[in-house]
Amino acid sequence: MDVSSAPRALGRAHLSHLPQRPPVSLSFQDLTYTVHNGKSSKLILRGITGEFHSGQLTAILGPSGAGKSTLLNILAGYRVTGAGGHILTNGEPRNLKQFRKLSRYIMQEDLLQPFITVHEAMMIAADLKLGAAMSQQKKLVVVEEIIQLLRLTKTVNTTTERLSGGERKRLSIALELLNNPPVIFLDEPTTGLDDVASSTCVSLLKRVARGGRTVVCSLHTPSARLFAEFDHVYVVADGRCAYQGTAAGVVPFLTELQLPCPKTYNPADFIIEVSSGEYGPHADRMVAAVENGRCQRWRTFAVAEANVEEEDLEQLNAGGVETLNFKHGSTPCFQFSVLLRRMLLQNVRNKDYLWLRVGLHLFLGFIVALMFNKMGYDASKTIFNFGFCYACIIAMLYIPMMPVLLAFPKEVQLVKREYFNRWYGLKAYYAALVVSRTPLTIFFSLIYLVITYPITSQPMEISRILMFTTICIMVALISESMGTVISSTLSVVNSVFLGPAISVPLMLLAVYGIGYGDLPVPLIWKLARSCSFLRYGIEGLVVAIYGPPREDLICPDHVDYCEYKNVAGFVKLMGMSGVSFWIDFGVLVFILFAMNLTGYYLLRQRLSPNYAFRAIKVIGTFVKNKMSVSPH
Image 1 (cartoon, rainbow, N blue to C red):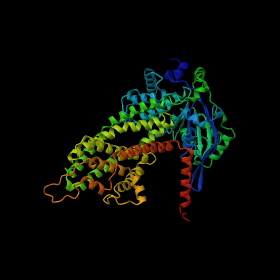
Image 2: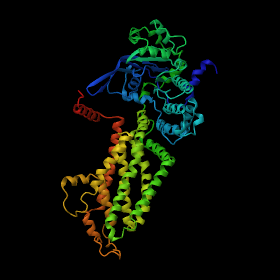
Image 3: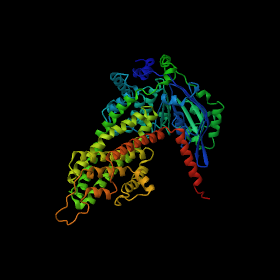
Image 4: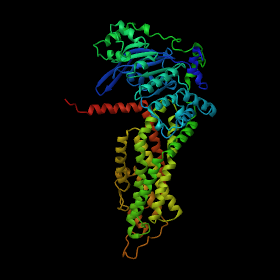
């Protein structure tokens, strides 16, 4: 291969089946960003200006706290509130909604879906991004080309949790290349990698940029060899631009300012140290030089210098401006099927978790069964048998809810990355989530009930068994959904605290008024009790076991008198006479539906809050600040 054909081989030619996108250059003018903390505020970005061109690999450098990650977040559209100024794409004002469909943001933490291999992850992403219109054979070609481009061939059958740091980073990049985004942002792509892995990662990013893409990275302290790989460098110092130009132009620029870089010193380290004020207050001089155009000569970017052939850019432009308006590559129904397949595959492969839940349900089932052994027909132990119903409700409350409180906050971070990068719609994801976990919840609930129901000698009538089982499963599904509602907006620690804390009043309200017969309950407590789904669960179980027609219970020979032998009298004492199973079941179905809608709404607000939700948060913050006591 001759030198002239190298760029084609390293760039677009390796990705033959990808949809073509026009190149997108990004520029910004007088960009500001302010953080408000109560009554005080802090200016992070101070009216900076710059431009990043298609075909370039750009590095944003700067000391810690200078604002480089903030700049990247604002340019990517990940952070909007508090930003000011103008951001342009190809010279036109940026349409944020449209731009988010064009760009991809690879965050510093490499969050990958667990329990699937590299090849499976790529094929699932290809289905979501490229849709059902493209054949599986073409998708396979696309996936194999990207895997080869990013040197992941040896890891195709390795599950994501077993990948090294460099492999995880490359897979994160590979997943976002599938539909050829024109703009790619990366936050600290070399963090946690050794020098060899960092060099490999940056060289691959340069190859990606050569395909006509705008690739922008924020970096902390790149080595000299790594620094030389970048086509364009943008240095941020205290929220201002201290340099923008080629990597090779850093040393001449500093020399003009009488700040010569030592020959054995890393230029990247030197300019960061100078801009941080380590050698004196020179940052203002650098900013003034940039504003006066003294680094203009180092800002020019030649297409030939970047090894992007003019013919390549013409073909990339052939798609026309209208290709900027591409949406999800697949329909909601197709997204649902792909996500459901992925979730079911992950559930099946998470064997430690499955066996843990099986063991827990078996253990708890036998414990409860032995505690209430043969009490179902025993008239002398009717109260204890009611305790069995209550124990079943508590088991169906906690066991399905706790795993969600522990696992879903981390899942939200994965969803946040995939949803922000337009992999799928949230409706398709949430529907797949509910459908994928329902069979497991039903299965584990049946394990518990198969043990406890017969051993405790409950009535072995098909109708009563079905009613008892249905109520338990409904309570378990609602509890699982309640865990999703709580953990969709909170961290793991706060979720695990709030879930059990909320459960306590629900448990107390479920049995409030029991033992008082048909005596009237105060209206306020009656309304509060009606808010507890556990109340409808316990009523449903009592009706399933003791509802008419049911004969009197058997009083053992060694007992002289059984007070609760008459079933109807016992039900009346519990305050549940006249209760309808179907009303309780209908209310539980409604609560389950409402709980899932609430979980979906809260998750959507966390990922993309609307104005009303933002206003509520602003009001809450204002009230909190006003009510806070001043330390003075």
